[in-house]
Image (cartoon, rainbow, N blue to C red; front, top):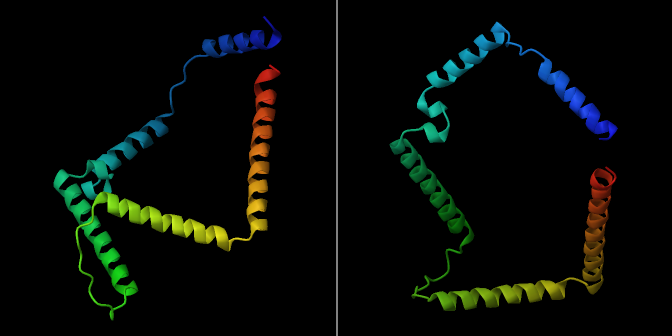
Length: 149
């Protein structure tokens, strides 16, 4: 056994030999008072999981309603009132996915052509340098914490 293991065992034995100490009576009274106060709170002041089921359902429905109203308000503000109404037709999942992918590829292509090539090269070099720094820091931390012991 090396010195650190002997010291660890000695400290462990000394700590186990110490008598257990009782908490001060003032601390015990304060803890019990806080527990009683928390239990005595009305249900709406407690955490959501302690609410009655009908109150939870009503809260969730009201929350979804507020979100829907907010989204409808935003859409009303950003849409042009002069446009003609669009006739909706049922669109299959595949048509919707293809439309989304073509729009996404168009966006990526536009962004790629709008960024100067020097910036793209610099971003690539910076990314490689940051990954290299992460690897070096991880290896240094490992060697410092685990290998030398």
